[in-house]
Length: 85
Image 1 (cartoon, helix red, strand yellow):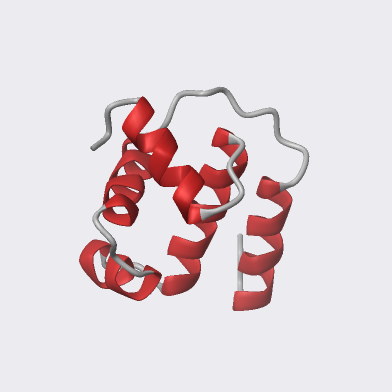
Image 2 (cartoon, one colour; image 1 turned 90 degrees about the horizontal axis):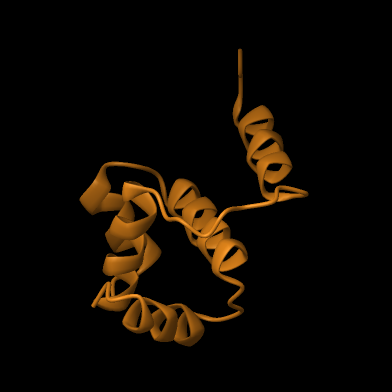
């Protein structure tokens, strides 16, 4: 069981490295992506979904890796291309 913030951070980093993602998005990832497209900051998104900013950063990083993007603008372009907007 995860006991402290450092362990949580380490767990999140491990899940981000070396995973072969499929291209499908989870409902949460779609939700985060739609908030990003609407211009919400990580802090705004965290408040809306009742999670920490760190969790939103994790989701954003995971989305960027999964979709092969390197910026928020790229994420938005991808969201438009898959019909999230």
